[in-house]
Amino acid sequence: MILLMRLNLSNTTPLMLALVVIALSTSLFAQTPANEARSKLFDAEKLIDDLRILSADDMEGRSPQQASIEKARKYIKERFRASGVESFGASFEQRFEIKLRGKAEPMIGVNYIGLIRGKKYSDKYIVVTAHYDHVGISKGQTYNGADDNASGTAALFSIASYFAKNQPNYSLLFVAFDAEEIGHLGSRHFVSNLPVKKEDIKLNVNLDMISRNDKGELYASGLFHYPQFKMPLMEAQKKAKVKLVFGHDDPKLGRDDWTDQSDQMSFHREKIPFIYFGVEDHRDYHKPTDDFSNIQPDFYVRAVETIIEALCKLDKPAK
View 1 (tube, rainbow, N blue to C red):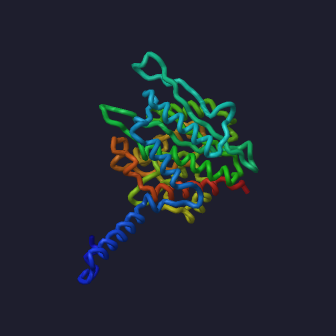
View 2 (tube, one colour):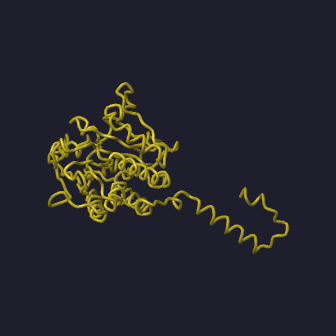
View 3 (tube, rainbow, N blue to C red):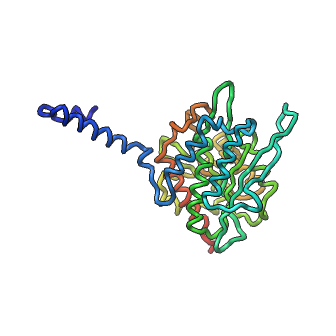
């Protein structure tokens, strides 16, 4: 509208005016974030489509307390396979019991584990994780959990596809955790039943809420506890496609200390180092409005590129 008002339309025919409107509409549409989201590292359209599918209404909020969780589980298993990871053992699945107060029978939770073997340190591991569950349906409203944490789950597939084509030095374990929202139960079970020796794990890189931030900021949290990773993350910071900042990991911050607020806590308790990538809480956090329509596709793609850059730096052999 503003652009049209600045044009001299005194000698413009109706046909010409129509062509101008079409051209401007097309240009404006092409500038929307959804259409600008491209990447040289992975299929950005597939990344965004994975997030859209995982946070769609028919997933019913991905709660392990609802039978509809099986739809999300089936999708994750298919995407793990398609992303180029191999199963760690006979199956991608790691099953465990979920016992909740007031429930006579335990439920079954399912973690999904995929492997990309390293070329230099194949018996040492970086564990890349994200939880796929969310709140589900409450009081008749569906909590789709687009940012929390369909965003981290979908990112696992794109990151895996990158490293399947660019073999890392360390082996990478990709794990999609169940039951984070009800007490980090999936990650607790994983850490208590590790498929590899604990001493062979270099660190955990956890992804939880990475698809939107009005300041363009993505936090890498954990350096307060594990300063040995500061140099590789500072190197990644120089090439970051978003504003990569450090913090939210000092116990003095109280609620603003994120150490125990996602699945990285399960690793930290066992003295396994972690770096947690996430954004600060937004107005839709844990609300029914955390929908696909509210993510920022361009920021999301750049955030995943930044995490890949960080993983490449963290994957460098020790000198």
